[in-house]
Amino acid sequence: MKRIVLALCLIPLPALADPPSAQLGAPLSATQFEAYAIGKTLTYAEGGQVWGQEEYLPDHQVVWAFTDQPCQYGTWTEGPAAGNGPQICFVYSDSPEQNCWQFYLGTAGLVAVYIGGGPTALSEVAQTNAPMQCPGPRVGV
Image (cartoon, rainbow, N blue to C red; front, top):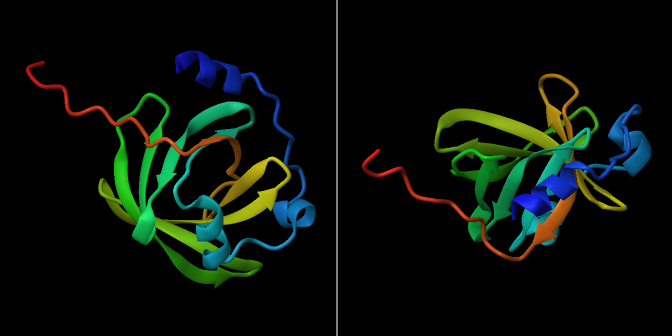
């Protein structure tokens, strides 16, 4: 598995110099996002560096993990429309703060643009139907 992640880090991703909407069209609605993502585990990268994975479960449930970090469990909802379209907002068990993104469907998969701080744009670099592997807490350490 680590070899796959390392290989994914070496895949060059297109730079997003222009706003994603200029390159990709309108952001996905909640219905479109759910139709694409449900039942999948997607790996996301920024600038060629893998950020982490997210598994999209029924009933708007998600499991997220930054690379080499513990899993975080959460939910997603359709957020208020931003200036240029709908948002998908996530809340995770480790923090009550809502994190909102706009998702676009590119030629290689999803592109997620963070709303509310910095120009973070993540690109889907891999997908599987397999569930995420979330090890339990370190017992006896």
